[in-house]
Length: 86
Image 1 (cartoon, helix red, strand yellow):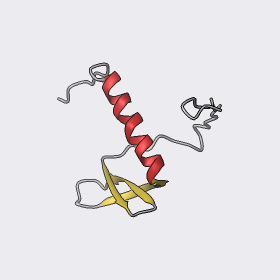
Image 2 (cartoon, rainbow, N blue to C red):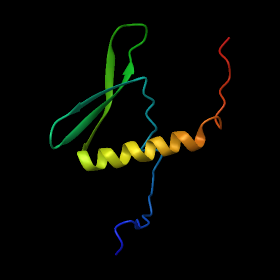
Image 3 (cartoon, one colour):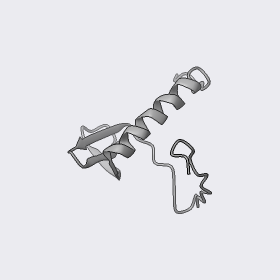
């Protein structure tokens, strides 16, 4: 199989067991083997944050993730509008 062609994968998501976790803070640590993302949410009006998810990946996967995230942000720039806060 050509390495440049990606195999299509069917993904099932159960929204009851796989909620979307909003993050307003992230901590990243890396070593020669890979990296860990600690996805956090601030706790009220305090200076504390709670880790809601930890994601580990290889350095190779992290590079692919960064590339795809950059592409997604570039093609969706200006497409998302949010309401102004009063």
